[in-house]
Length: 294
Image 1 (cartoon, rainbow, N blue to C red):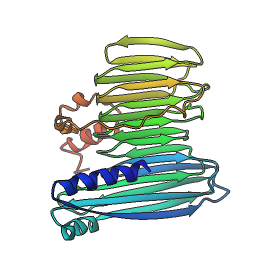
Image 2 (cartoon, one colour):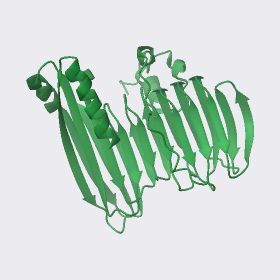
Image 3 (tube, helix red, strand yellow):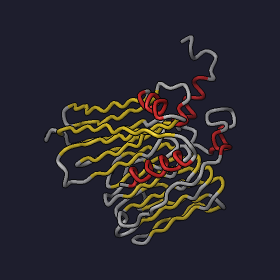
């Protein structure tokens, strides 16, 4: 519903500015074999909103990708929309399965194209999301989690104890992480230009280090690393009895163009990413003059 509202708002603004907008929806449905006990979700979205929800009441895994494009004329907007693509597959290997969603565009100038992705699964034991210019919302999942966003907020809420490593990074926007009692973790929370809030409302946490924009704590003696980073925004962690209930309507701030600078360059410290983050290691490899030779 919120994704459709966002598309409608964008289209309305473009029309008022004299442009035209086109939209198209792709839908996929997959039967999950009863033998698949561990189901993970892996999403790479070129631009837009990503929402993932695990709900035991559903029987199938579904993917809805709503694409939109704008231009000065309806014909050009439709042509731009035709340059976008979506691919969704469910790969099963015995007791494990991975729902993969990939979106992209062949357009030379993709600034006026979006793809909003909504995934609904009966269960989820792991999440990886790579997205830009839109908020990311994950509800009801568990397992190892890696969310990378650029110019958008990230909200993670679950009623299942989180005992695996979690990494959430964004360049612009707030981070919300809400988990129940029974969760564990060695928390390392940082914001370059914002506040960090950590509230344990159900059980004790050992606070290790506190500084402006930085907080370290250990929950239930956990060794699983919980790393969260944002450039411009706040990091908020709640350990609560009902962590799924608390949500918020507005999740995205207007982007600051400066946040797009040095995303993978020598000044990557301005994003304050962990040393083992995928973007950091990728940059180290590509900057090695011997990398392409061997």
